Image (cartoon, rainbow, N blue to C red; front, side, top):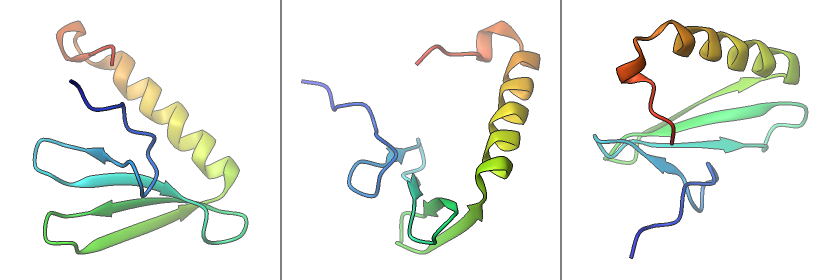
Length: 75
């Protein structure tokens, strides 16, 4: 049985190959937080406004499109 896909919440974060966890938060009013926990439990969070998040997503899409096709997984 496979695990459910991550919802990017603290209850069901994304786990990378190095066991880092990535998830979104809404603990600060008006901001979306992007939290990362390392395998030892140390964490960091960056908080973005809605506009900043949209710019971040657009830039990520631009960078992804520039990758060679073999690196663009469709997960």
